[in-house]
Length: 148
Image (cartoon, rainbow, N blue to C red; front, side):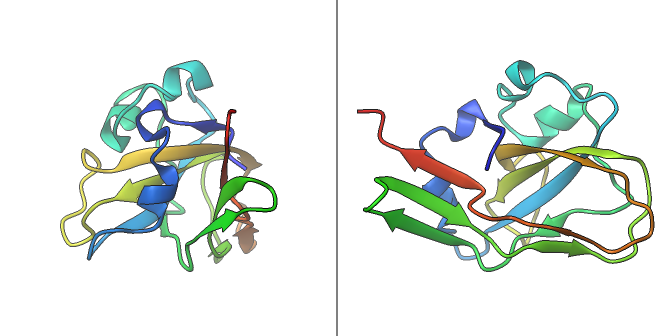
């Protein structure tokens, strides 16, 4: 589940995760452990470009991953909406330690731009890519419940 939901995405995650446009997607962006800003600062970034212009750096050696099998489920029993995706696997990854991953909404995959990617959620992760395959479980990466 998300460590934070970005302010720009509050109330919008489920709608964007439903992938409403013709060429949109959700992307998982790994961030280096070193230099991560505090959640209180990170949640105020409105685009991935804003986030990466700050002290936090993308961990580029393992690369971004497009999320597959994204589902948005209204759970009437638990009175919430749940957003899920297939697990993500990196094959023989190496590089600097990862401290978090950000899931962002890409409005148009034909002309991707960090300035257009809306960061939705951030998830803490402590992982050093060491050449062994690594699978990240992306189970219900976002849940929203009524505040009433």
